Length: 410
Figure 1 (cartoon, helix red, strand yellow):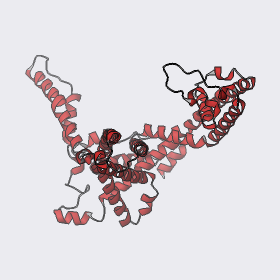
Figure 2 (figure 1 turned 180 degrees about the horizontal axis):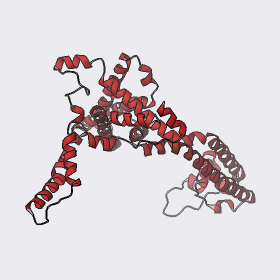
Figure 3 (figure 1 turned 90 degrees about the vertical axis):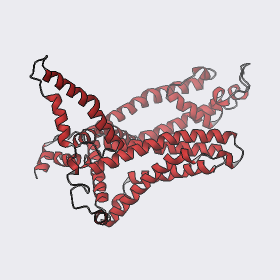
């Protein structure tokens, strides 16, 4: 996939009508689900706060239709893809693709919470909040996966983050051990001291005091949270002035963790991101694009293709549709663009000059925006090839080494 000729072929494939239509439908359904899911969850929480019976927690079906529609789209998309790959005896491709399992989680979670909100299930409000919040993570992971497969710069960024996290495994383990050690040391130093035994001064306007805010080193979990926030820069040095040992541990923590480990972290991240930035992210991006193009070809040439064509009386063609569909609007769009490339040779006061200006203005204000909007409403199906290529193709990488050039020549 790093060979430029292969990348050109993949760009040509993904800018065709059918892959473009699927990508646009994915995007529209994903945005639709995210918007209405956020609205429905907020409305459901408000109803659950005041409702005492199951009927009072129910949402109207009309507000949940977009959720059912989006889940149904991705469900049938996966089913058709599975059937197509099974017919080609390549089901293992779907099975080992993480993005497909993300789609499965997406469909299951969206459908489950839509049913819960419609029927008023799950009386415990805390469980409902936690579950819907977890689903939000899945929704936005789906957005990240979509952008990663669409934009090579975004793929470099996401690939870099994932590669850095993998390289940070040893560092994070050591950091957790150090944080646990310091939290236990602070807990031991302050145990059974006036810091923990004497109640704090409570402001007059406060009804009750929060132990986490006033006495963080009296319990292990709050001690660990306080040490972690110290790592991020939130430090109250007055807490350590009552004990020389606590002051020493505080100075040691600031030097070892905040100064030393923070710079080690920066060095690891910088070195790891350079590795992914130039080579590995591009390979991952074009590999994902190759997988998507292969999946679209499998769907477009599924076992139902011949039966559908025979039922509709359609003949054989390149795109599984009307002949010449891949070049629909190509010549007309080229002529429209030529209007803005040609120089006007007529005099500024001639009728031909004003007619040409009006034609350009009409094309730029009416024809082109209308065509773009028409393509949006049809999920890119009525766009000319030039527009699809401008949106969905990515820059082809040149040869990064002599060996890559020799591989292409072979």
